[in-house]
Image (cartoon, rainbow, N blue to C red; front, side):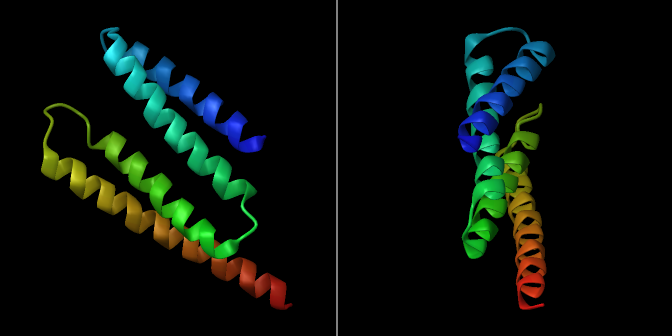
Length: 109
């Protein structure tokens, strides 16, 4: 249920931000909803997942999607999109490993 709430709420935020920042075209608003929903599903999965190793993958994918959203700015460049997605994935892996190591350390004590 938490994943659904995260997905819907961040998708609505994506719709709002897209409609506010660009001329209102249904294509851009739907892309904002899709990217927002993917980010919301990722965060919902991060905060509800019991498997700590799988959390690393969720962090990486979520931050790769966030990086890809940042790579969509004008003027559009495919190399910028790929580069920012890769940076986001590296940041996500770093955050996921950090949370995994902290959880593993706390469970041993």
